[in-house]
Image (cartoon, rainbow, N blue to C red):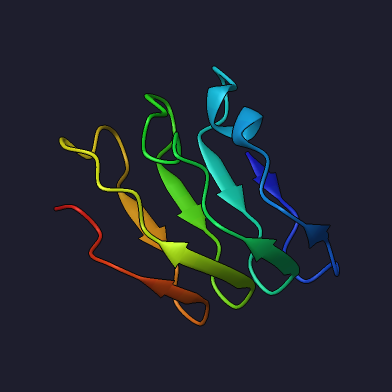
Length: 86
């Protein structure tokens, strides 16, 4: 797991994060991330918890069905629109 919450991490969210085979928890909450969510955000088969709340991410939430392995995802307090697949 990687927890880098509240560390003023800035820039865009690299799509390579969601290709890491052993990453199951990613917490980048309360940073300064900007830009759209990567298209492969929902493609991780190992990710169980993703917390990107309270950043400056914008654009649409990728629509991918089924929602694979995620148990918990928090995208609140960003400038995103769309639905999180169930």
